[in-house]
Every structure is written in C-alpha cells, then in structure tokens.
Image (cartoon, rainbow, N blue to C red; front, side, top):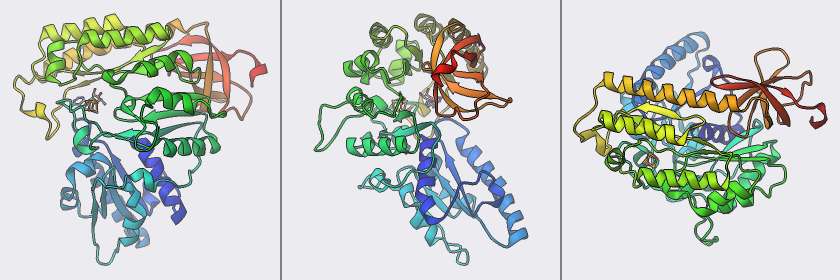
Length: 438
Ligand code: 5AD
Ligand code: SF4
C-alpha cells in the first residue's frame, strides 16, 4: 500500500514540476514513506533520517540549497510531532490519510523561518476525492487501493490505529482510476486494501456489491488482462468472491489469506474472530471452485502465550493447507495494541527457533509448488528486463517470478506463453513456447 501511496504522491507532485529522482543526493524533496506494522520501523525511520541529515549538509555545502524533508506513512501518523522534536531538519510530517495535501504543504515550507507542517488528520472528505488526477507512466503491473483501514482489531495489530476505520472507496472512483491505469499501459491491476475483501459499494451505489462483483466489472475493461487482490480476511471470503475465482478468467488463481496461527487458543487471544476449522473450510471451498488456485498466507510466530503445542498446531495447519508460498514473522509488541500487556511473552530464542521451523516448512512447500510447474506452459505477463543480456522477468498467474530469454527487445507489457524448464526457491526459468504469440 505504501508503494501505491508513493506513486500517488508522485502523480500529485508532477503537475507542480517535480520529477522522480532515485538519487537522494540531488533531490529537492526527499519523502520517506514509512511502515509501522512491525517492530524497528520507528528506529529505522530515525536512523534513515540521520543519514538524510548528513546528505542535506553535504548538499548545502555544495550548492547552498536545502532539500525539503518529508516523513509520510504510518510512522508519521503514530509519532506526529515527536519526529520534528527528534529530527528538527524534517519539514513536513504527513499521515497516510492526508498526503493529498502535499502540494499545499510543500508550498508553505519557508527555509528562512524554518516553519514545520504536521498533518495527520483523518479528513471528513476522504483523500481519494482529491486524487482524481492524471496518472504518470506506470509499469505493466500497478496497484489500485480500493479499501483502507480496519475494524477487526486483532490484538497484535497497529493498523486500526494508524489507518483508521474501514473505508470502501466508491465504485465510480475505482473504475475511473482503473481506466486511467489501463490507458497508461497497465495490463495487470492488484486491488489493495488492509481488508480488501471487506470492500463494498457504499452510498447511492448498489449496496449489495462486494469485491466479487467489483472484479467482474473490472474484467469488462478490454485491455486489462490480469486482476489480483490483497490482503484478505477469512471472515470476508463471501461466495461471490469465491465464484469469481471460478468464473472470471482474468482473476488470477492466487489467494493470499492470512491465518496467523494454527492454534484456536492463540486465534482467540489474537481476536481473529474465526477458528482453524472455519479457515480450512474457506480454503476447501475456494479449492472446490478453482482446484488449481495457489494459496498464500501470513503467520505470526511466538504470540504471547504460544506453547510448543500451539506451535505444533501451526506446523500441522501449514502441512494441511500446503501453501504455494507464505510470509512469517516473529511477533513484536506494537505500542498501543492490546497484546502489549498480555502475559507470557515468548522468549526471543524460542521465537527464533520456531520461526526457523515454520520457514523451513514453508520453503519446502514453495519449492515443491515451483517444481510442479516444470513442463507446464503458463501465460506470463512480462514486467521488465532481467540482469542478463536478452533476459526478461515476468510473473506467472500463480504469482511466481519467471525468467526467460528473447532477442525481441520490446516485450515488456506483453503476455506470452512460457514453458517452464526449471524451478528454484523463489523463481522459475522458462522458454518462449512459440514466437507466434508475441
Ligand atoms: N508482530 C508480528 N507480525 C505482525 N503482523 C502484523 N502485526 C504484527 C506484529 N505485531 C504481520 C501479520 C500481518 C502482516 C501484514 O504483518 O502477519 O498479516
Ligand atoms: Fe490488522 Fe489485518 Fe487484523 Fe485488521 S484484520 S487488525 S489489518 S491483522
């Protein structure tokens, strides 16, 4: 989501004459877009700000000009004016719901008075109403935020506090942005939301529309070829969305469905609002409707009170589901969340050992999943050039990275049938099936 927000910030600033520069040294504006989901985010932000201060000093010595330094995102939201207190060279602190005001905030920065601007409101008029702006060039795959915030209040999670209550972006605004993206050359859209499958059409719009219907509608855009969405909550996997995995060929056969733990006791402590059996039933149903679907997930290892038995239950669940790939993290206390005061925090060494076991098993499953692809022919969206001569990098429908060679020099954005020849831990290798489909 931060990637999406960063791109939108660029869209906002382009009409004011700014262009993207990956090199901080020469930049007039440096934006640090931060994430607060797991531990060390705050420390990382402050240490990066230290590096930025040194760069500004250098630049000032060379040119006499100071860069405008902006801290955006969820650390900005959580820390507010503390950032300016600890890093007085920061000019603007802007939260994830307020970055639509960036052009105005930047115009107010006055290097002589060295005034500071903090905007961490949750505005009544949602930011998307201000983001009806031109879209800069995009790659062949783009993100589109359709939903933000969360009302689920898992006890480990900062999102309900940093991103606020659940908000569904209006249908018309989503469709307009999707069309703009496609006009800018985008072939694949990943719909984003902290609880993306809680999206529903609101207001005067058709009230019974959920994510499944939205996907059907987006699939009508002719030049749009691939649709994905992330991240979902098991409770919001309704039948329409599951049916879309059977009926909408443009919807990719990949589902990222976090469960966090394999133990009902821990799920309860986490306030996940569903049991293991309910999670398994959802996956079974999705597989019933689309047998080839690749399943991904998130796991938190070492939540307070997690015993070895709970940990074994997590390993059992992973074995039962058989993930194509999944993310796992050591639990870290987040300020202001209910779990901070829970007893029985798990020893760091035990957490590390359990995480290793979970990751070893997930890696094994990912390798097996990738190996199964060998000799199959997959429809691949070409994303960019690889590091080697004539090499390209693409993405398979199952969200695997795939490398292949071609002498053609303009394949980016094309969809090509690739036959998989080899499989590795995090990628595949393949050859073009036939020149006919280029
Ligand atoms: N500790 C560890 N992992 C966390 N996540 C969210 N909060 C925490 C935390 N306090 C993980 C969850 C979530 C993913 C985005 O980040 O697995 O699904
Ligand atoms: Fe956080 Fe997801 Fe739980 Fe919401 S559903 S509180 S975003 S982990």
